[in-house]
Length: 83
Image 1 (cartoon, rainbow, N blue to C red):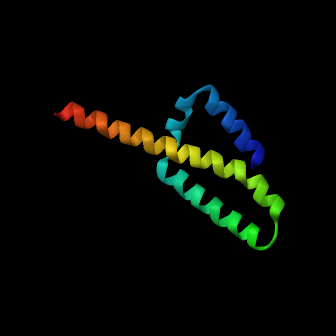
Image 2: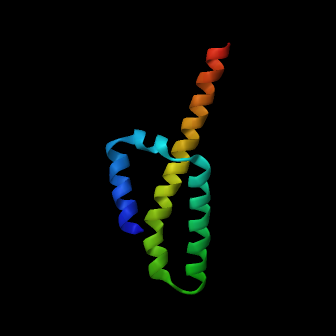
């Protein structure tokens, strides 16, 4: 999973429009699930797994934040168009 996230991160850095293909709800649930798994790994003492999970969680956090900012700016643009 770490290798996939590193490749996805490289693709997103090259072209940020790739994130528009991500679903906000699915990305949010993925982030929440990863946080719960990381908590579980921490509790059983798998610190290596916690360290490997940090870049993955950072990526999904960036995706969720990016999509939420995009949705907010999209709503503001639609409000301006209706006035």
